[in-house]
Amino acid sequence: MNTSVIYRFFVVLLTVFCTLHTYGQKKAKLTAEEKEKIKNSKVLVVRYEAPPLSFMTPKDAAGAGLIASATKSDVVENRERFRYYPSARLQKKVDSLFRAEDLITEVEIKDDAYEFMMPAKLKDLDRHKDVDADYIMEIIVPLMGWRATYGVTKWRTYHLNLGVEVRIIRKSDMAMVWKNNVGYGGYNDKNMRFHITELEEGGKELIDSKLNVMVLESSRKLVEDYVKAKK
Image (cartoon, rainbow, N blue to C red; front, side, top):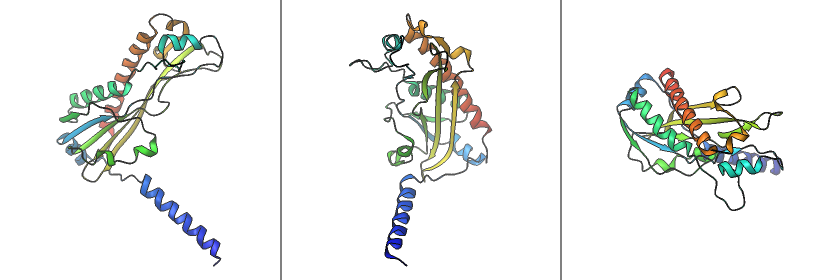
């Protein structure tokens, strides 16, 4: 066999091995028995910092300055972005609803958020190796999961959307026993719609109140999906 072919073969093999080692994620089934263990075991609920609210802003168009001024969600000069911290609200709401439904009983909340991470980095679970819990429930708002967008022809009418991912990790072997993604809001939800002029007065409060609704409904959907989930 040609030496260059052999070399390329081993390079490919090494790449595959490194990829599996780095990004591999052990998975387990969420059986009825596993749910019962989760219910009667210590669960640590953690969150990852959510990205700032992402506003679609038409370049050099009227309204860009208004969005930045009213919400501070755009980068403008040296001003800090206004943060709504959706993952912190989700952490509390998911925890309370799971306990209310008697799905988890012994719960601890990790107050400090992990830094925001992209999906590839989230697969490395070494951060949980010293956790004193039987299961870890992670609350994640992915990149572009917290957005205000507009339609092609109606850029002054915005639609809020919140995307949420929840993972439950079994500490004993770091296996992921459940993963689910839900979203709330978007173009078809009139309650999450607002006109750019509504940001002129009380813009922060407007978005804040809509976020509370999205957090509640997303958390309810997560509980519903967990109850239905079975393998």
